[in-house]
Amino acid sequence: MFDGPWGELMKQAQKMQEDMKRAQEALLDQEICGESGAGLVSVRLNGKGDCLGVSIHPPVLADTPEIVGELVAAAINDAMKKLEQLKGDQLSQMTAGLQLPPGFKFPFS
Image (cartoon, rainbow, N blue to C red; front, top):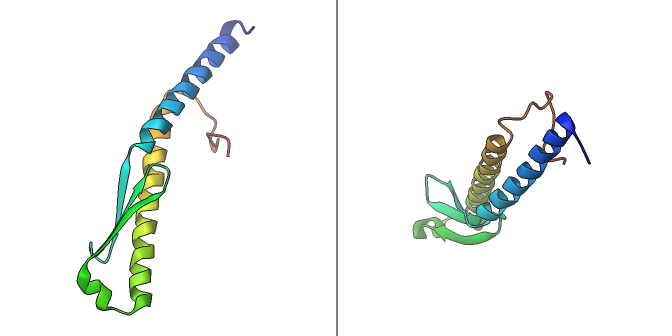
């Protein structure tokens, strides 16, 4: 269908799509941990961002509910940032050889 440079570009795009699908599937098996309060609260997420567990050091539970809630929220935010960084790192590895214009967003979102 496409010849020359366009055909090669289409092959590269198809390969990248396959690589991205494999990377996304591998990411689902990852477990990301976030912490707050110097490790007093920790949260584990999977690659989809689903919460797998929350661990709260027992003395923290003596604090007011607002403080406990803030620590849990901070741990979740920490884990989500780490997950986004992991996704970004994987995407950077896949697009490293491509000549993308400045400011180009990939995938298209």
